Amino acid sequence: MVQRGRRTAKVSGDERQDAILVTAEALLGGRAFDDISIEDLARGAGISRPTFYFYFSSKDEVLLALLDRVITEVEHRVGELPRDFESDPAGAWTRSIAMFVEVFTSHRGVATAAIAAKARNDEVRALWSKSMQSWADFSTEVIQSEQARGAAPGGIDAHDLAVSLNLMNERVITAVLNQESPAIAESRALAVLSTIWIRSIYGSVNPGRP
Amino acid sequence: MVQRGRRTAKVSGDERQDAILVTAEALLGGRAFDDISIEDLARGAGISRPTFYFYFSSKDEVLLALLDRVITEVEHRVGELPRDFESDPAGAWTRSIAMFVEVFTSHRGVATAAIAAKARNDEVRALWSKSMQSWADFSTEVIQSEQARGAAPGGIDAHDLAVSLNLMNERVITAVLNQESPAIAESRALAVLSTIWIRSIYGSVNPGRP
DNA sequence: TGACAGAGTCAACACGGTGTTGAAAACGCG
DNA sequence: CGCGTTTTCAACACCGTGTTGACTCTGTCA
Image (cartoon, rainbow over all chains, first blue to last red; front, side):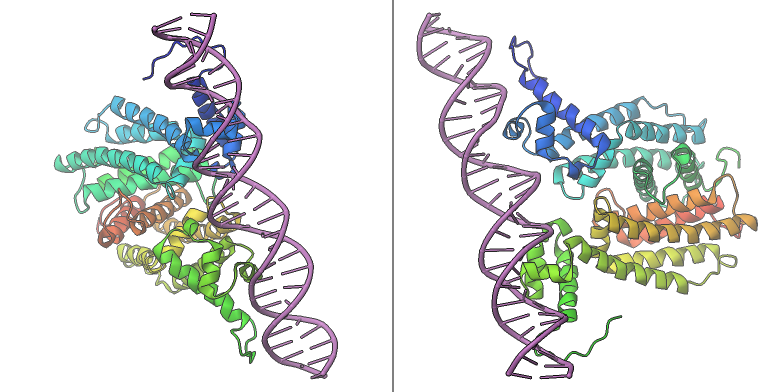
């Protein structure tokens, strides 16, 4: 992305930028984004607060960069998902949902901070929206094709259903990651979510075996 | 709640307190909670900023008071809900969900501000959690009795299901109120949500007529 | 090799919002 | 009236954000 190879004695700019990101993700493991000051990020990266502004124009910009990485990872894994919905609908949906659960669980701090930040930051909201949109579109297409081949009943707009189920996942996963109450046990989250998806998409408990 | 009847020439304390709440709810109609300063609330109520602190110890305290009112209204209306799940399951669930949609829609500003604030404020979180818990408990009991009488299939823990569906409602309603994208049309929200509830609780499209 | 350019750094400042203090004004009850 | 209580606010202390302008490196090129 940017040419490397400076032979500077001191730490290079890119390393500093990276140090800020690493510090941010580390601190997010322990406390809320709002409780982390730019001073904290700067100190963690070994620079002064004004110098922080040389690398990022705000704290939110850092979060945005971290979120971007996570979303890229999800996009990549969505693309690799097997699309065996005709042969094993329940398994296929479960594997898709499992992927989201895994990625967000392994970036707990970034995920929860970003989801909270989209309430106040336009860029974070835009990025998150774009991704939600693309996941909802993916789900919509599959639901539509399931409805078209007669495996799933109509009576509900595929897009509305897809959006609602994706929003449910977002919220349930957030609740689990934040250990909210009420929430559900992390170990059961995947089973519960996929059961709801399958029942509400197929209108039956065991799609394929009616 | 507190005795009234002072014959003061100037506006009384209770009226001032109320003026702050009224101002807050009015301002919340137009902008985000974070974009409202204590100065704004004080000016709106016709007092100075320090005087604000005589009535509330913080901005969040105001939101808490507003949220408390809304939750009280919901609790009240939950109590009045007909419990005709045996005779008309689909209708009964739909009426319950409709009630939530109505109340939160008519207090859009408070609802969205409170849901955002629970990320950072312990008291707001506690109050919201308590209510979610009680709504989830209500749903759990109904689901359990539907499972017990054989109207709803097992294969999923009633409480997990209830919590997930309630979290879905929270998130979908928030998305609608905030006009997020992706979201669903406000006019279709109720139909979509109740369809998902019914399909995932009963494992069929038309409970009662299998 | 020596000055120049640009990257990197930070002390000091300006600003805006929150929360506190201490003194004073308004009230109402005896 | 006069005394306690309620109510009010100017002034202050504080904290986090974002900006400015001057300074130091370091690699480059004449």
